[in-house]
Length: 382
Image (cartoon, rainbow, N blue to C red; front, side, top):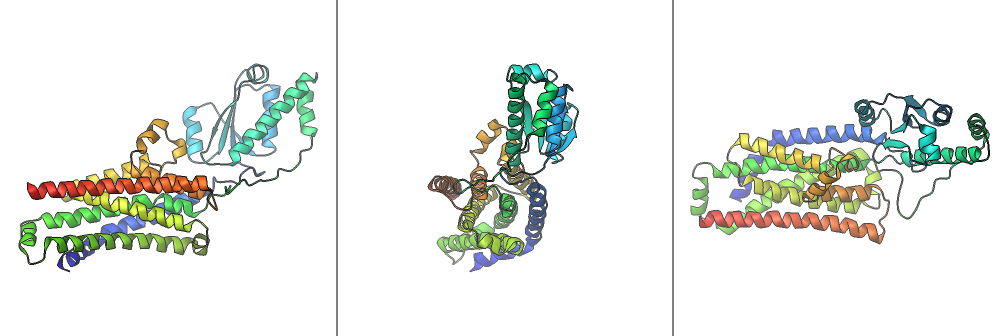
């Protein structure tokens, strides 16, 4: 087991990098979970949210709408500054921004145009706010059509009594995003970052001096060397994978393991592990020095994670970016993770989407492995 022991020795020498990525991963996962988790409200549940309003009209009807929303939500009046509006939405100071135009009555009440709104991606309560605004405006229009003045129409709406909203659940969907969703969202960063560095340093070590020639001249067959190398690579990946699940066990315990979808989370992350191992090995074959490795490892891990919805939710990303991201394996991992986060059980339709996402990841892994074999054969023949 000479080659296997050599892999493990090099891993021990670079264990600090692995620990660093584990520390970053757990820190980011915990912080982002609490930050993002606060924005997830129950589906169609009567609850107050932080709502921003840009009132450029200032008329009676516009003020009536603002007062109506203030009776339900925490309303914050804001200036029409796009940069400030985006910042408030990004930092979750507000979950929903309503912009009332200067000619509110003519534009919306007469011509029937919709009000401009901006929402936090994934916040189900925003759909309920849409419903509240639409219901209010329709009621006001009814009173105006009946001959009420604007002031009396607003007063009549205030005096109306409303039935409490009943929360409904359809099919297998759930309005509550599982807390461990955010944990699994960042798994690709851990796998890609840690494995790119680890495999890069291991493969660089075998390129030094005449080590490769000594291995070819040794009594150990090339086949056995390859088997030991694959075994060591697999063990490194599995250890990292198990550490990830020790983390989810420690943080969520039975809440995760007793969920009906834990098997799919396991399958999805293991598939991502295979992708990360094959990609990191392929990258390591072309690395010649530690400086190059550092640049490439960071570029691959960070770029792929930013483009594929790990650090930036897909809901706020440009459609053209998402179309490009479909050519990257992490995108399909995140697609599966997103489906699992929204359901307690999977209908045949969603199960099919999950299996397709996992299957596409396996195709990426197969493509990377094929490239590894092609490069290895080319170098031997050369």
